[in-house]
Length: 96
Image 1 (tube, helix red, strand yellow):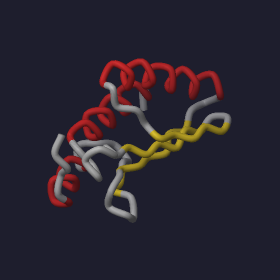
Image 2: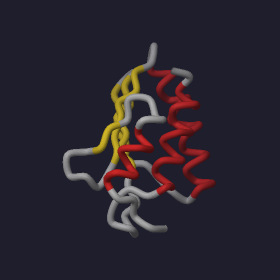
Image 3: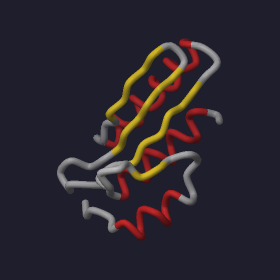
């Protein structure tokens, strides 16, 4: 998959809720907050199932009701359409 250029990433981010380009320009990131741990874990489970199906796995960190997520395509050396697609799924799966 081909790495997206910064203008294409910025355009794609306009259609995503609260995602932003990381300072290094090689990934996109977002923090999700839920009502409790159960809701956060349920979200992570839904994303894990889709990520496995896509063969594209997030970098994430969870504490109680918060999930910090970073998406990048290591093979391409930056953000690709796979990252945008998974971010879009995460937005829907979060219910936010």
